Length: 343
Image (tube, rainbow, N blue to C red; front, top):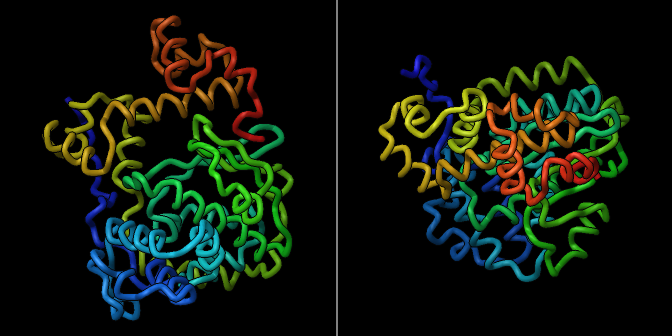
């Protein structure tokens, strides 16, 4: 019997929660600069030109359709990168002001975490640290499907360009991507970094811990406070549906039946909703297991026995097989590859 039900603090693909004047407006402005036909760009999205100058809200599904159209209609392979450079300060108003006036990188990430669902409703981000590095782990929050790589390129570029604006210099980030090395690698090297790895178990961005205390150029506690007060007036649900399910799995080690009950659905309805978002429950369980194994074995450097116990495995051979299936590496190989996700 499940005792605690999940509060409806998540958004699904079809929920209209994202202000149209934010990302959608940026995509339209960028496409106009590349002479993309506006009517073709909006075709099939259910978005109208007047939406971006109103208080109307869009669904993540609509935004993904718009991004797909922009990608198809824009020549070359630089669309995501150039659009990413436009996002900050962009059309985010008070959120941009709060970030701009942060004290240091740690404070900026705190603000970003609070407002992430507004800036980037597509991705869930978790932060981890070693003695020398800090890294950000990214997962699909809502069901980006074939658009995931474009979304990754877009927001990684926004991170690089945005923090350069905050500090006046480029932070030497290191990137790990779960997809194959693209043919247009020069775009990654120009807009992101030469420190790139592809076909990795997880998507992550890492950097030296010394940058966490780097002071922002326009630091102002009072201006940031006023901006954050304005941000509260436009809050949307905290997590995408997939991110909410992963959180429930990670915190309570739930099976399908118990998870469905938590989300106030029958198992069949729950499975249909997961399928709509491009995942099965088993895939999400495997993703959570993979992330936990990487953190415990690679970052924390715990033993097999300690890691298996924390992940509620009673059988060490089964734990080893699961880690190998999730990551492609044995626990000992994963433990030795200390820099695989932080360099």
